[in-house]
Length: 114
Image (cartoon, rainbow, N blue to C red):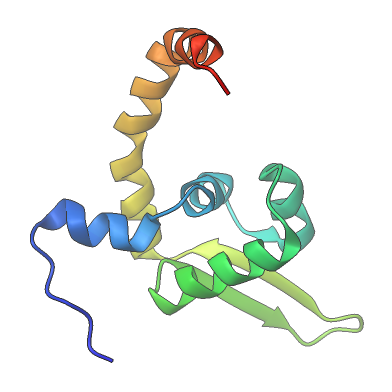
């Protein structure tokens, strides 16, 4: 099934990083390759099933590279591609904004009824 045409750059970017986990996975990979177990620990709250799914989608979009080492036991590492590195660079200002306003966001969330 063909994808719809994007209406703008934000539309395309959100299609790639949409959801809670992909951005956190990208951030976990910002300083180098990681094994699956490392990523699982660095992205608290994500289930194994969802992490696998999100990594596959990021790999399909050529944001993440999956390297399988022919060892016993087999070792698999995930790293950012050049496209992934550039996407992480684009996310840096969003991270800085979040850090600047984290206390305010947390206080607002605490006031909201559950």
